[in-house]
Structures are given as C-alpha cells and as structure tokens.
Amino acid sequence: MRPLILAIDQGTTGTTALIFDEDLKVLAKVNHEFPQHFPEASWVEHDLNEIWSSVIKAVSDVLKRANISGKDISAIGITNQRETTCLWHHGPEAKPLHRAIVWQDRRTHEICQKLKKQGYEKYIHKKTGLLLDPYFSGTKLEWLLKNIPQAKGLAKSGKVAFGTIESYLLYRMTGGTHKTEGSNASRTLLMDIKTCQWDEDLLKLFQIPKAVLPEICANDVEFGRTKNFPGLPDEVPITGMIGDQQSALFGQACFSKGMAKCTYGTGAFALVNTGSTPVFSKNKLLTTVGWRLGHKTTYGLEGSAFIAGAAVQWLRDGLEFFDEASQIEALATSVSDSDGVIFVPALSGMGAPHWLPTATGLISGISRRTTRAHIARATLEGISFQVRELLAAMMKDYGKKIQLCKVDGGGAANNFMMQFQSDLLGCHLVRSSLLETTALGAGLQAGLTVGIWKNLEDIKKRWKADKIYEPKINAKTRKSEIARWDKAMKAVTLLTK
Image (cartoon, rainbow, N blue to C red; front, side, top):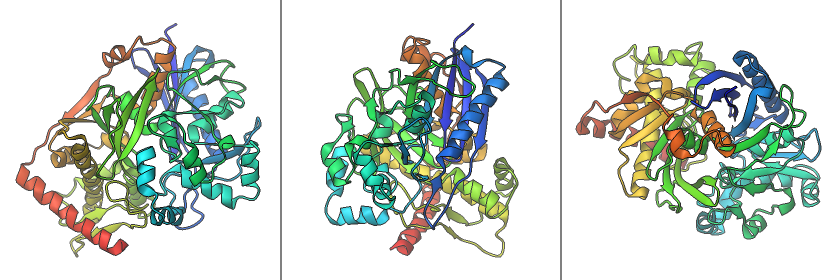
C-alpha cells in the first residue's frame, strides 16, 4: 500500500486532521471546533482538555472518512497555533495547571511596557528577532508562574512542563516526550535566534526556570512515537513538528530565498523566506526561524494581522449578518463598492507594522445609505489593507520587490478578497490547489524525514496551483485606495494614545 501521512493542524478555533499520499492527494479532511474562553476583556484562553478532545475526535473521524486503519499511517506531522502558552503537570494525564493563554491574549501588556521602560526592547530584538508585545509566549509564561499558586516552585523542581501547543500534543500522544523545535521556540522571547537554543540571560530576565522548558530539536527528526493514543496503534512515528505559519510557507513550497506567502485564517500572516541568514527588521516585522533541516536553518521575515477571519466570525456571531462565514462574499459583492465605509479590524489590538496592543476596531464613513453589504465589503477590504501593509514593510526590509505571493487558508477561497488583495499589492497572487497548506507543511516534513520524498525538489514537482490573480487597477487608483486606509489608521492611532 502507498505511504500515507496524517497531519494534525491544531488551530485557534478548531483542530483539522488531514490524510494525504505521496502525490499530495488528500484522502480525507476533518475539522472540529472547540470553545474559546474570555474571562476578562482582552483575555483569551483555551481549555487544554477541550483541545485534546478535539484532536482525538478529528483523528478518529478522518480515519473513518478515508476508510483506512491507523495501521496504514506511515508518519505524523503536527502544526499548531504558535505563541499560545501551556503549563501542565508531568505525568500520563498531563493535567493542566491553568487554561492555555492564547496568542491573542493581551493581559501581559503592563509587563511588556515595564520592560520597554527599562530599556530592554532593543536587547530583546537583537537576541530573538522579536518585539516586546503580549503576543509572545515569554511574558505569558511569566504571568502563569507568578499568578498560579505553587506554580513557580513546581517549575523549579521540574514537576511541571511548559510548551506551546505542539509540545503539549507531542507529550500527550507519546506518553511524556517533552520537545519542541525552532519555529515555535523562536516565538517565545526565550530563544537566541542565531544559536536556536534557550538563552540563559533571557530566562533570567523573564524569571523562567530552565527545568520547565522542552528540548529544542531540528524539524527533520523523529520526535517520538505514539503510545495509547485512541484510534492509532503504538509506535507510529511523529516526524514533523512546526509552527503554523512556517508550516504554510513550507507547504507552499517556498523553499527558495525571496519566496513569500500569506495565510488567511483567524489572523492573516505574511512570511517571506530570507535564506540562511536572519534579517532584522527596521519596520517592526518579526525575524523568525522558518525550519531547520539537518544543520541548516532557514529564516523568515513575518508580519501578522491579528484579526482576519475572526472579523468575519464577528460579523456572523456578534452582529448576525449571515449564518455561514462563506456567505460574506455574496453579501459583499451585492454592492459595487463600500460607499466610503472603511473597517480597521483591530479587535485584538494591532500587530505589525503598528504594534498597538490596546487598539480597538474602527468603522468609519457610515451614512444613512450604509447597509450590511457595505460593512461586509469593508471587512474584506480591511483584511486586505492590513496584508498590503505587511508586504510593503517586507519589501523595505528585504530590499526587493515581491513579484508573486502565494496564498492559502480559508480566506483565500474568497475570490473577491483575493482580487482586491492583488489590486492593492500590484502583484500576482497564486492560490494553492490545497488551501490547507498549514497542515500540508507539517505532513511534508513528516514524510521527508521518513523518506517518502527524497528532497525538496521532489516535493516542488508535486505542488500545484489552483488560480492566479492579476492586478486590475492602475497605480493612481491603488494610491487613492491606500490613502483611505492611511486616514483611518491615523484615527485609530490617535484614539489609542
């Protein structure tokens, strides 16, 4: 029988399980959502047991849908929502000390501000490639250790484990293996971006005991083997782990320096491959590890818009504009333009290149003529405006124009938004034939490690595009559109101060 890969994509709002073969043909795909918890304003949490249940159910259902047995799986890849911070007791049940603090959570804003005032931001940027923002795991872990009774003592004695979601899943799936890899570790504020190892000075700064941390591995290793995982036999190798956005870059076959992608999920995440040398941004982008194969590290420049698909979910659930998120395109295109309405979807602060953690959303240009359709259209445009800013900043840092950007994620299925995105960027967009490239990337790494594909060139030959979007507006119109966004952003910045 041909080799099959199981890819688990543990995301912010749900878990996707995907099974595909050596020709990248998807046999089955399943997604299960799980609850979000908002205990206070700007706080976002996940229950690790609810996540674990969603993973078990997704794997069980995808095997049934593919009509195969767990014995048919050759290797497993795991990708994950990144900076989300977990703390659990060592032991077979991996009992959580607290709910996981999600990457969108802003509770550590004051910790970050204090460190900025003490002059640590440039030092941290030089060490990690990151900025001081509540987005990252380091301050979240510091908060957990300070605010959970006995947590600090348990951490020092090695009785509890910290990890981002992929570490937690690996631990549960293998019965206790505590490891991570560079793409996730590079998002913690605790890893030296050049050595790809935990940094003693940073651990001291954030008051993190080293005993609580997982081992950092390369991406092409066997991280562990399944043990007592429902629906799978013991000893199935887990040979791919990688953070979701780096996984999408890999899944888009962006293996060469200068290749870029944007994933439209809960947020929108643009990433460009910068090769074997980290490029430190002057435009508030993030320097990140893409992946480490063997002894070679591939780096990237990343920009994150915290809210993309989440804005569509808000229109669906909060304002009840439609029943299904996919209905937004028909509503948005029922009008010829947004009639002057512009939406800055800063519903969880703003990421690159602004980094305004306390910013709130803004809808402007409303008149008596404004309808739900105008706001729906402005929402899709607002997502695209954010991504344009990310790519513009990347081109400044990278020093070259990006001629082509590959796109994926659920939002990339929206033809109106992808065309508007191409218009704003003034470059071609290439949509992957498989929108779930986040899951695909982890699965490709898993298969590469066990020899299903010989090398990266072997993978590139199998990658297929679905559709290409070309810009349809002229430079004058593009400039006018961007000016509308810039005016709205000035208002957001003013209101945030």
